[in-house]
Length: 331
Image (tube, rainbow, N blue to C red):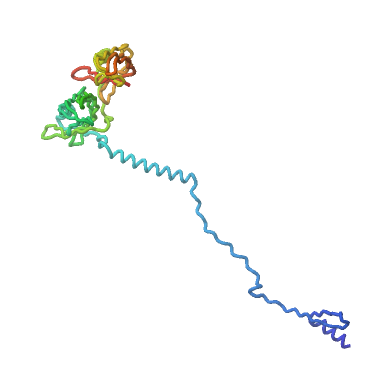
């Protein structure tokens, strides 16, 4: 009865395991305590997702292209403004009506007089004149000459108080540099300021421009082409008559030969197939052709023989003295 009572009690109580190894009934009570969650055993909550800052989209190729176009336009405008404000004061504004009694001829007269007076200066670069020549050596016997019509085709603008005259003059200069004779032809773009002073037109200043004004347009003289070719051929004959090599300045020299007692002989007619071109900004007629000339001379080393040939550009101008051949340039 006691054993049965114990078993009955055991059924109502905690779980009991029975061990019968020693033949005795030994009862081991295994009591399980309920577990309560602690900080160590509490279930981990999932980590919050890391919030990344939103990145602005980078500009694509199309956006960059527009930026570059805008920058290019701005730079272009800056350069354009700088060019317009730089240099030779730019082109004058449109002219206003002249005062009563003032004509183009009267405005141009003091300009022409000043250019011819400037040609009388015996220096390479007169201070108050538009022409200028240079030399690295001491020079002497300086002589300027004006060719053609320096005020022909000039542009005149009047702003209400000053006449601005833009034109082109052609001058030549001869001088002695050391022991060498020099000759040069100069195209001289100029700007003159003319004022009306007590009813008289007076020149205030005249300066050389860097470039010929686009408003200068000289008239081509009514000359027969045969007359021009005759003068060019005569200039070649004068060059061939030289007793020196190279030929004098103004002749088609390529400076290949150096000889005394030279005999030059033209091997063909240099104007036979020549053509002409007129430059309305300078008034110069360019006679273009080919030539060949033979040399027979003597220098320090003995006899010198050879030929000089190639293309040429003869500068021709018409003025008060008629047709002038200013220069024949070997090309």
